Length: 301
Image 1 (cartoon, rainbow, N blue to C red):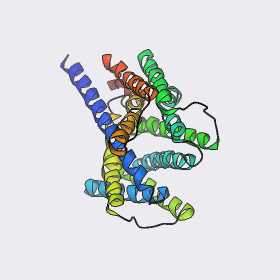
Image 2: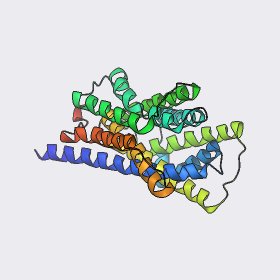
Image 3: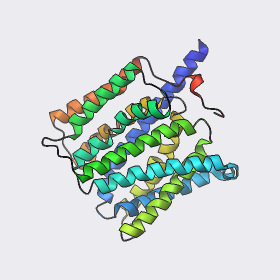
Image 4: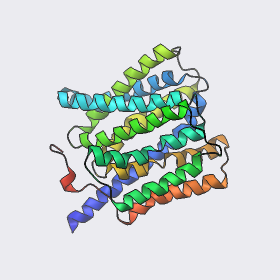
């Protein structure tokens, strides 16, 4: 019994940690929205992830000497997935509405159970599937507007959702094998290099101007990147990929919340209902948390 209680406690801690990360991402959404009015997106992300890499390098310290080829390969793959997610979304936003982009990006909550079954051979329980359905309906009510049309931007954002799903799935595999700090360090480094290359190719590389832009880079680099992806890795040691995705889907809810407070945005009744359903989807599995059993640990975990 004590082991069972401790197991559930770790799962609860993981879920609460992920919720805290979605709050941070929700807050930074409003900050990034304002900062991108004075900075190109790839340039901003270059600074953001370069800072995240430097923070993780300082935290890792002498751990860096323990990096082996397996850790490098895992970090590179996760970093490429993360870069792909951010890049597909950035390009897609140029050709579709914010509402469409928000909904389609959130479809990673649908892809994760499918990929979990195919890649990890882990079939999600009925409660988890139901929570995904409820959260997706809520996401649609929050994000979609009448007259939805599919265009090239929607396809690009769909690629973002799929790529981020792969990131969650393979994170589940690697967190049991490798050092979490080193995994995060490598991811941040890969994304920083690729975003810098994208900025040099597609945009004019400029220095940030103004205190608010620098503040946004610091908050996003330290808290929404370095800390956030380390916490996600740690949490995925304790809870399943499907559960992770249902918790992370709360980011749009907190984005709306902070948008109302900081930017004076408004929300319709459809939006409020959508937020409620997304919250319900997250809470459904709280009745009986779906956690990782000890048998799910990968060798070396």
